[in-house]
Length: 195
Image (tube, rainbow, N blue to C red):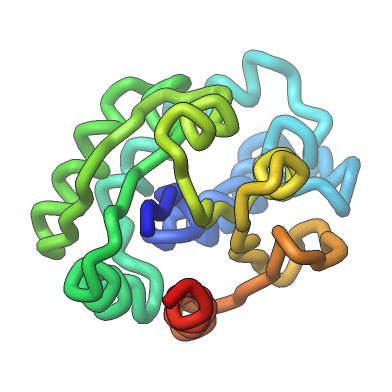
């Protein structure tokens, strides 16, 4: 099976650290402008920051957070199990669009933790096109809009949803997961159905 994987919030824990830094940046450096849209996840949507404030935040924190991130609990073990089971693992990420050095930071983390993948698609704004072109059978992402898009196009999608992320209605093509054990169970069962 060919499985597409996002990096941040799926393989690496960087999303939680970014949210922490965003709250502190807003409160301490911007003097508490506050959350403008509590149901939004990304900093540009969540806060009423100017473009300059958002760019400053990204430049100041993103690369450092990326360099200090580590795998989500269970990610290394399950990725190794999926590879051993014969699945092809494809990284499909937006990393590298905003801050180009974040690509190398991820590569360094993969080497540090001995995480291996079969293909890499960096700085991708349109993950759906890659999924279609590469015949991805299951896509794993933590962004609701990506999950909606892939599942609506009949690509089995695992929505790695954090507690404050938008809730999506599950269906034949969309399943919410909250940990790597659930990811492995889903793929294992899907693989058994196909045999």
